[in-house]
Amino acid sequence: MTTQMHGTREQWMAARLDLLEAEKELTRRSDEVARQRQALPWVRVDKEYRFETEAGRASLADLFQGRTQLLVYHFMFGPDYAAGCPSCSSIADGFNGIAVHLANHDVTLSAVSRAPIAKLQAYRKRMGWTFPWASSLDGDFNFDFNVSLTEQQQREGAVEYNYRREAPWTSDGIGTTMSKQGEGPVVEMAAMTGTNPATFLRERPGMSAFALEDGVLYHCYSTYARGLDGLWGMYQWLDRAPKGRNERGVWWRRHDEYASR
Image (cartoon, rainbow, N blue to C red):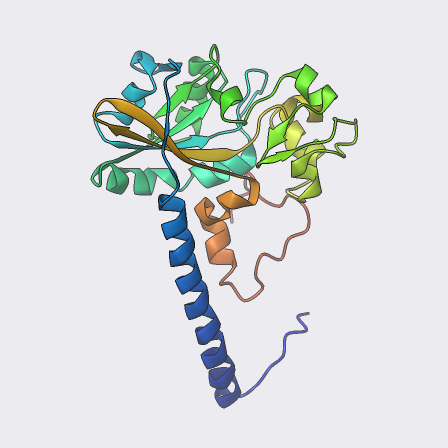
């Protein structure tokens, strides 16, 4: 039974008006943060990154698909995974509906993972997704943008994620940013991808923004961990539901794994 306070319509309205002021302030602050984000200096990308796509070999510039802006979702799907990360899968469930709108506003949305392209295509078909998804398996892209790491880096603590250096890996996951931030029991999440915790955490979630101007590529922005909250559609709805996120561990599944209701 909920312990939520009950009240009259008048009490609700008074509290709602107070909340409205807080929401308006949050909106104004969010607009200001967006302006700061877009004011970041662009950094030229001279390295030749190569990807595998459903159309064959591609460069980073090719991923723009003729547009001048590219948003990359760093999807946790390593070469040793049997299936994509369920959290990334939940986020990606929202991509199909918005990708067409972004494409018509000079922005391409693409996922990038280190799993082989055939594995990505099979999983995309299973999930019913249509957005572009490229494999960076044989290149440095994921490593350079701090969303993949080697076993040696993991064990030595030579890992930077979310702009912080992590402590060395231990068997229970202590020392990892994901564990510290409570993003869900690592063992359970690893099992859902068919891996062990160490292998699972050698991939990390994130997103990066790129621009293509006068034939020159630029890296404009990257965010990780809780910086992805705003892109995770279900949480924006849950934050407005009567009981909020109301979480106890990893409650979500891939959309085809729920029991029908």
